[in-house]
Each structure stands twice: as C-alpha cells, then as structure tokens.
Length: 301
Ligand code: SAM
Image (cartoon, rainbow, N blue to C red; front, side, top):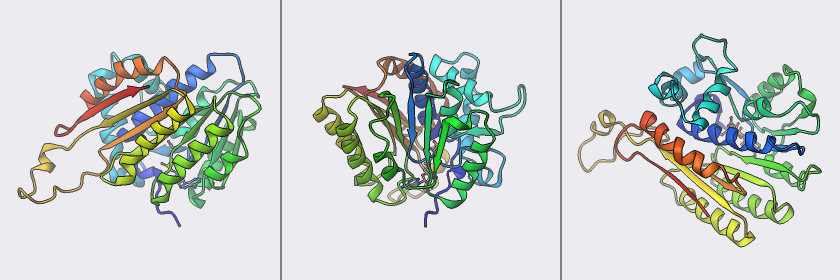
C-alpha cells in the first residue's frame, strides 16, 4: 500500500507553485458563465494543519507558504501571489498565525460558484486520507457539488470525459511513489485529449534526478503538439542551502535536502497564465530560493 501522505509536504514550495497556478486557472475558467467541471484525480486529505505532528516533523511549509507569508513580498504581491495568499488566509482566522493549509480539493472548491452545475470530482486511494477527505467534504455547505470517489483517479477520469458541461479542468497530481505513475500520466493525457480535446489539463511532477521525471514534460509537449493544442510548462527550483551543501567532502554526494524542484505542465492553459507567471515566479523565487542552483522557468507553445 502507499506510504505517501501529503500532510508531510503541505504548503511546501511545490504546493506554492501548484496551488498558485491552480487558483489562476480556476479563476479564469469561472469568469465565464458556462458551467465548469473540475476533476482532481489525486486529491489527498484536502485540509492540513501546519502545526500537526506531520507537518511539524518535516517543516516543509517553512520553505514554502510560511516563508512567503513572512516576506516583504506578502505586503506587495504580484496578482497570482496575492490571490494565493488571500485564498490560504480565507481558511484561517484573521490576524492569527496560518495553521490551516488547503489542499487542491479545497483550493478549487473555494473558487467554484454556488451554481449547482459547477461540479468537483475528487479521487483518493489512500484509506486514511480518503476518510479524512470525506470528513472535510462533509463539513462544507455546497457538498452536493462535490463527488468523492475513493478509487483510482486515472481509471475514474475515463468515465467522466467528455463532461456534459463541455468545459472542464483536470488536475493530475500523483505522488509518483510508483515509477509507473509517469507513464500512466502520459497515457492518461493522450487518451483524455482524444476523448475531450478542448479540456484544460494540469499535471504536477517532481523535478528529480530520475530519467522518467525528465522525460515526462518532453512527452507531454509532444502529445500536446501532436493534438495541435497549446501548452504551458513552469518549474520552480529553490536550490540547495549553502550551509547544508557545504557539509560534505568535495567529491562526495551532498546530503539530501528533500525535494528542491517541481514543475507543472498544462494543456489548453488560459492565455493569461504565461504573463502572470512570468511576473510572479521570479518574485516567488527571490523569497523561496536557497541559493545554489535556484531557478525558475516559464515556457509555452
Ligand atoms: N492534489 C493534492 C493537493 O494538491 O493538495 C495532493 C495530492 S498527493 C501529491 C497525491 C495523492 O494521490 C496521495 O494522497 C495518494 O494517496 C493519492 N493516490 C496515489 N495514487 C492514486 C491513484 N491511482 N488514484 C487516486 N489517488 C491516488
């Protein structure tokens, strides 16, 4: 069974990139009156406590949302960052320390309209996180707009495309615990584009020294190009902190610093996303960057 629990990573730099982009996309797609379907194939637990044993043990939010909130950028953020900080703040009491962090299901749910034609499908396989997510969904007023399936998200998506609304966002955010996730993501995008070519698809992936991880954005570009659909690719690499990088003998492999970089790949992205990210990502990197090797990238077809 899976050992990955998103609670250890909630609010880290990868979540900052992913959720900032997710907010921009959902906001753009809900600006038109047409009904919207959002499918989150790998939902996680939905809400996380940043002061829990989980999050406290790894402290990953300290290199993400917590650092961003404490930075001068929080006082004068570019629009994408402002929307992200505002959404996270809406889950926390005003003027108090940020303790609750919303995962993708609640980031999306907070932005959906109350129109019952807007629909959110959530898939989560982990028994504990699936149960936690069900409990959180049960607390919301608009729960009738949310369908939670504790099933395989890749499989579940198949039955939902094309959606009746003909306007949909699919977020594919696996933990990549198993190597086959990389090939499943690519196969899922290929099949989904065949069934529903006008959907917006967003894939998150870790930038790690593994051939499958490097290959994934290349494969996704090829698939989007073959389908004649526009794409956008953004990465955020916070680099290595000099103190930790210097603690090894030259020639030795430096000590692990956890995940330092991640990327998002979108097919049929909103046209407004590229300039917005080009403004926001350098500013975010300036705050979250740890030094050696830090970088960001925004490219689009
Ligand atoms: N999307 C979430 C967010 O941004 O808040 C985080 C998701 S986490 C990276 C990946 C989740 O996918 C884990 O909770 C894991 O249990 C779940 N998972 C792994 N394989 C799955 C599958 N085939 N179908 C559905 N869920 C799966």
